[in-house]
Length: 266
Image (cartoon, rainbow, N blue to C red; front, side, top):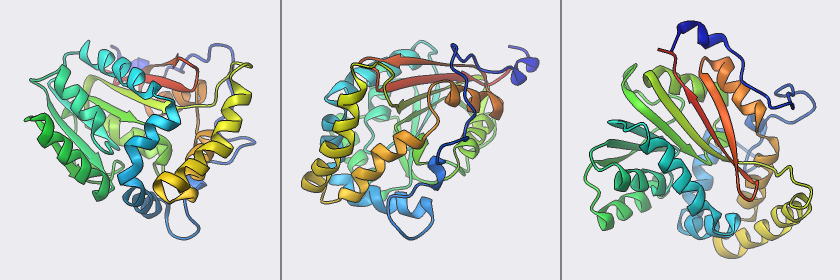
């Protein structure tokens, strides 16, 4: 890598757009009516933690397992020794990485103690020895500079109170040449898929959230946050503007999730 790469723009694949023009910033979108976003997100995930895994299967129609395998394959190819899984939730990503990379040291960070409690229970059942789950703010991890080989985030970036600040923190703690791999939901571009997606996310998911999790507001917020969050070339541009190089995305079947990757200059 070359330091000059830091200023390169991400590739847009023919559909560049300004990051915020004409759209509500996802950072300004909150699950509930009162309080700062960080506190509201923590409250939301504490509340829905018992139903979170079931709702993930439902929201993704089971494709989340396939997307997770793609993320693990991407990380495994780098053979990292030290991994941080931000917004780790109930620990599925961290534990999948531990199974694929038994020699790696993995730390899962999350705001929600309710989610972390479930992650620790899963860790005990799996016997994953080199995984540690800690409560913390992904925008202020407290980890040393240049100390991590890979950072992963699954469905959590759009819940950051400041996405750019989150990427700046990732860049700070990554070692030169280290990578970030982000799974994030997106609105589909395929015309055949888009109408069904809209109906499903605006009606079925909030209703299921009320029934299974007892929190319709949370599961109305989640699809709304997908709509408001940067996606496709907007997200890779944000990564590049933060200082990453080689930012790129792959749209995963059936078109409602992207895998974003980027590298710290070296």
